[in-house]
Length: 250
Image (cartoon, rainbow, N blue to C red):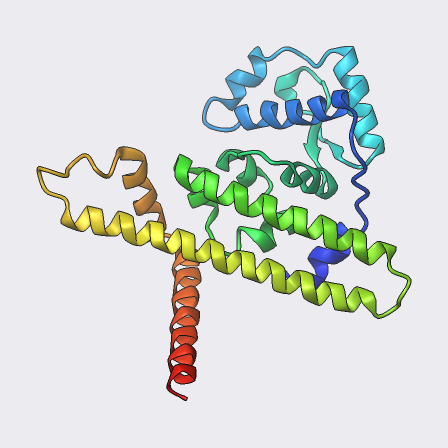
């Protein structure tokens, strides 16, 4: 997934402020489909109430603004319409300051936004089952990326200079890579902390790595994308330290 494709799709999104009712409906949709994942999703679909007429009206407004779209009817929901976020809807949600569940993000693992910002660095299984600590780190990172993207794209739209789009695209790409590098450092530090505790734990410290962190370590150990991400971050850090040492010796 290229940065050019990411920008070309987001530049078509108009993210004017939503009314409180529209925002509530969008968040309700997220929460509904977040809860409908997993082994018992079929049972939950059967038990869930249908959307009210008022909620359907709000969803219609979100459809008109290209924030959600209708997907095929689900046979377990009695023929009612099924909605998912569009790229613009996901962009809006990620621009809001929230903590996102891995289950929800994994649902949109093929989306251009999450392909570029998240799933080139972590496997879907890792995201879907991550610990609360990692969830917070990733949510802050995604929010920062999307707020910066939104601000830069708005600047690109308002500029009257033909070459500004290329210039600001380059600036945004640099910013997103910087944020990703910072994410890599944070996750690598957490990974080595988990690893150190796991290797050195004894009867005195047996509880220092709780069950969720223990599972997170297992996920990271088995994640090939994270291994490459971590290796690249460490390589860049080594090169930076070598450059600093060279400059200090001059």
